[in-house]
Length: 146
Image 1: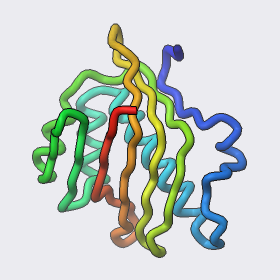
Image 2: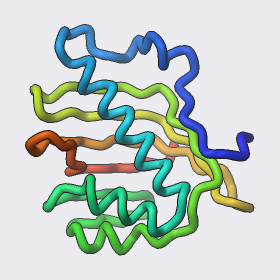
Image 3: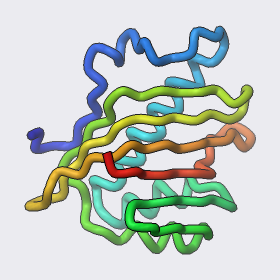
Image 4: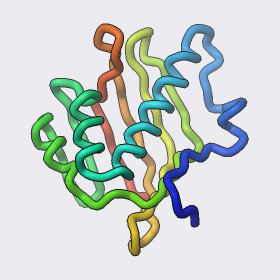
């Protein structure tokens, strides 16, 4: 397994067959993939980096669902959850996106990640982002064991 942080979609990165064929949404697709990559990078860089990233990206109202029935329903609760151990490496695989208009989008993908000395974590992940002014904000995130 990789020993450093890694964004990996293989050959799909250059010509992603999962991207919408609708003109005008390519920027949204690229921006959503970039946001997820930056989120994982922040989570791989430690608590301070994760908290800083999510303080900037998390919308004023958000919802997160995690394996085991964990439901986080407030911004403060979500930011407190950023205190876990950093990931040693991660991969984003098979990203699929859906534009929900010009200012909202959904991204779904398979993720693999590992913390130092831990088991490989595999999940199906989906996130919904909305554009507030010129910035994307995360409003929904779900991880399902995969």
